[in-house]
Image (tube, rainbow, N blue to C red):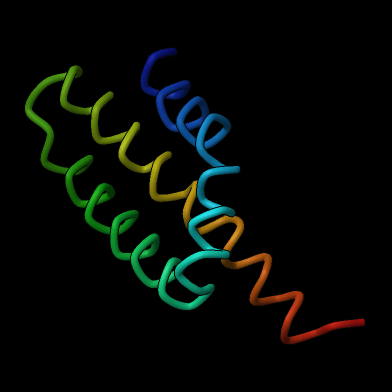
Amino acid sequence: MQWVLNGCAGALAALTLIGGALRRRHGRARVLRYGCLGFGMASVACIFTPTIEWLIAARVAQGIAAALVTPASLALIGATYPK
């Protein structure tokens, strides 16, 4: 169970800066769109995993997608509400 929980958190922590760089290079909306799509697909994969190993892999995929969503969503909020 610890691997399932840490799979998402570890990937998110390790790749958030890369998500910010991708946001700067490819645009906030595009990175947010693909991040949300990836997170949704990984969530569906979590539902249908046959073994714990596949669940851990799906949770890591969720963390990777969340690393794209987090900086892009914060940048969109900052652009929408500047003060």
